[in-house]
Length: 227
Image (cartoon, rainbow, N blue to C red; front, side, top):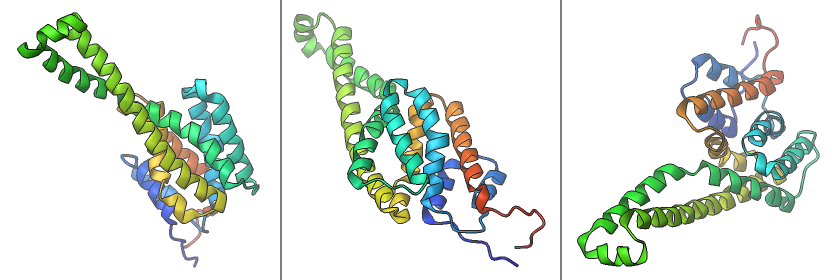
């Protein structure tokens, strides 16, 4: 009788994100392990499953994404990179991902509605007419300015924090540190690549299936084995 290995924290966090709304059998397939997985599994998964999707969705950032994919390929083979190299490679990728993942349309609509209310107020109509022509022109100007600034600030702050933690985790092969950001990272991967709820569910499922494939070598090959 073989005792089943409990999941490390990073895999537990990943499975919670990837399996949200997925068939129960998928969760069980991810959770059933016969030996403790290392972060090499994650490097292979990111290089072979995640980054090809990101390259397709963010083709304008392909050089930066390919540089990150190369680092993950090396790490999967046991050839680590220094902290500075991970940090420098991760940050531009994460900056692009967080910028794409920002809920721009919703933020723009909210800013536009607020500006229209301001522009249509009787006390403001003379000033709006003088400088913008009408309330709609003012609202469009304000909404774009406000939303661009908010999206940039959002991306810069989150990318800097995620890149630092991820770089430290990968450079030191520190699974506990990686557990702090793995769930958030997967969410931003998906939100940067998918526009609708249906697309997001499909992509979560694709990433989950890809992780299962890479975990398969750690799972029992014998369906008749007693655990």
